[in-house]
Length: 334
Image (tube, rainbow, N blue to C red; front, side, top):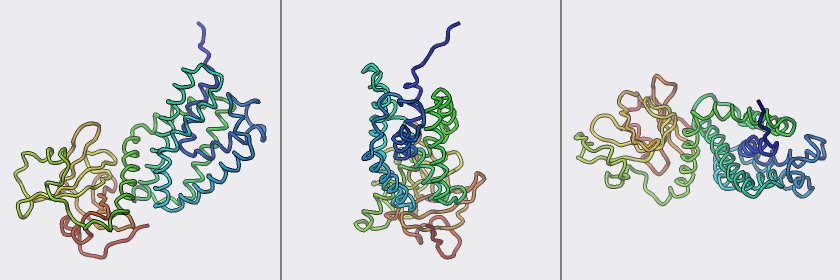
């Protein structure tokens, strides 16, 4: 039985694309410095040795420092990563073109597209995980520690790719399998954080309020058809919201909280279906307010579920009244 030999250039593509999605500039810096430091094969696969240029290394190093600085603060981190949602896949394509230099054009084009998708996915998942930590999900881990861990992982992946690409692609595949159940929720969390930034920019031009029933999107209105219970005054009203760990929903979802008679409901779309969660079974504990959002913390069986509202939506007192939050000062969060 004969074994199939795969070109090391093709094996190196997935792990390098994922490493670039997690930390683009550190990946480029390591690849550029590899020939000078005597790391990996000589020469590097494809045309990666072209990165071994003083001007390239200085430029990449400066951008690495800029990213390191931007990610010390949640707001600047979201803006930086939002722009890199475009920059990362383009850079992944260019990295693949360098790596696959000398391969047939169809292989280069296909590899560049695959690298763009993998780089973009890795960037979105990594950014979404950072957003959830900032929003208050899970343990409060220092940002510097997270950065150091990510850098250590990227260094390990790049070095493993240079010395043993077959093992690196196996490691990348295992990492993808582990992360895949959470990937969509993390991508939604990143998307919601970008929406919060956009909403913060235009908040001065909008009155903070609930939206009328006519302003709800068509899919949200359709999910309420047949509901004969109305809010006081005979009209449903709602506001865009994010939700973390609501029972029966995905880990993170983007949708609308709708106020009606009785308990509010959260409606959302996930994987081409519309979901609806009655919030009456979840007791509201407190309200926390940050520069970009208001968070209603709920008491549930699955961890610490919460709802998120942008600054253009209802104010803290209105949320306190609608969710029957116990009286007390509104907490602030970083």
